[in-house]
Length: 174
Image (tube, rainbow, N blue to C red):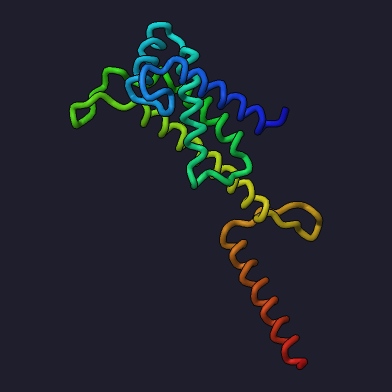
């Protein structure tokens, strides 16, 4: 079973659980009240409940379907990592905290922000590793040399000048 099939099975299982246990809205979406109830149960048990696990997993899956993250090849990895990060942070949510407007804080936005920032971290690490590969060059003796940003930019400009001069020389032959 590949990652996509496993992910589909996990999503189906989470959606079925929410449909069976949801008190309103037929399990189509999560409400702050439902997440808050599960957090209260989890705080009493001192560990996250299965339903809280499924809720956080579904938040991560739904967030991954946003247009900004839809076509990433490592989407399964992003979902897993953000889910793990959110589960690690479930106990840090303060059920009693009241924000500036006098309302209780939203557990949905808390978990969504954790997931969002973990997605951003994964994307940043991916691009950083790709850029790191571009900034490595071989020395004449065969060892690798890491170019700093200025050297890399100068090398790119020199390559563009060389390519442009070759193009101009080729055109002059006509």
